[in-house]
Amino acid sequence: MESCNRVEVKRESYIGCLQVSLVVRHFMRALLQRDPSKRLGSRRGANDIKAHPFLRGIDWPLIRHVVFQSSLPLNSLFLLVLY
Image (cartoon, rainbow, N blue to C red; front, side, top):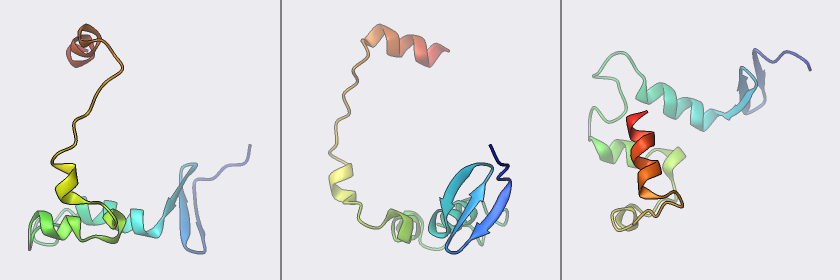
């Protein structure tokens, strides 16, 4: 297996052996910005984050009403939380 430490390829890049698009890279860098005044969300809060191209297509009002159901029994979830 060939090494893929950090290779730029057209509009995508590889970090380790994980292929990551430029949009994802920009989103991660903007969220992890060290300077809080430059960090994504520092100007308009969550609206800045929701407007990022990486999150385009998400129906935000619908997200509020989503109920997640787990296939794991409740006692298994409790053990996962304790772990």
